[in-house]
Length: 112
Image (cartoon, rainbow, N blue to C red; front, side):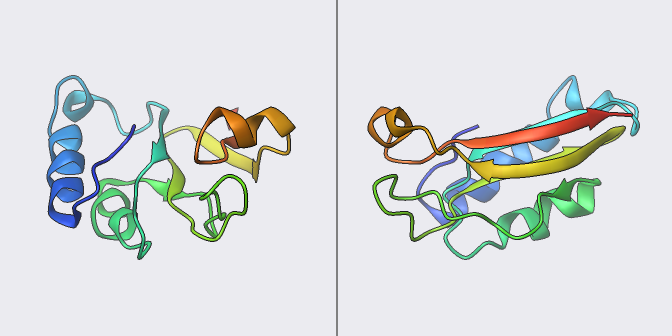
């Protein structure tokens, strides 16, 4: 996902996601992966909205922005249900620095 720049806009977007069909009707063990540019400068959005909905985070946020010299952790990965986060890293490929203004997250996950 790619959330907006305004703090209020991001909250509204995540609430709509959590309240949307078919997500709202999924069994709690169904694997769900949510990742992308959260634009969450303060790192609180997931704690406030996703964790109460049963999501687990990738742990310590990784700096991904700007791609040429990452100083901010704007991108995140959350999982819910029968999925385990094994490892999350920033891409080290040279082309990643040119492909976007953010470095992509590369994750190893296990469906349990």
